[in-house]
Image (cartoon, rainbow, N blue to C red; front, side, top):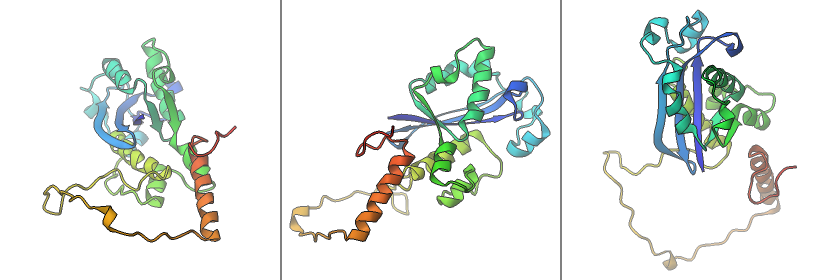
Length: 234
């Protein structure tokens, strides 16, 4: 399973009124583990950045003036996204801007280049109805460290989204696998003969079974009916 977590920063809020993308960050995950592959682009939007947007992401006209335009990076971006499930927080916003950039190049919309687009904001709203579900709010609720997020940054936010998504989908609590000790030395695990042990079997009581079934139902719902142990949601 190949997934790409994607975020954009823009000159303003309205792709249909000519606002443009100024930054794209993408992080790849294979089978729920970060692969180490990513793509990161700063872009010259060929128009001024709104002051309100600068206050959010810190990317000024001067900084962006010598960066490539979207047309220069489009092929590399689409090749990286090709065939993947692309996960974005408030996907409608990012998709709208990506489609506007692609339309300027005479290219099909983003959904025709990828396997699937998933909106993590919609997932969070279903899981936490009536609560704040911004990326910052989810980081706080799910205990994802976002202390370095002084400004919004596309690559940083894509990484935070990957952590949030893992916790939303209950697969694991972290993307980090610790294989070193405090001194940075590699840890070697000795083989253990489990046959030498007699493990006690503790049966769940009725209350625990009910709680377990409720948890499975929540996971099934959050996955959009894709849980393997239950039939698909109609």
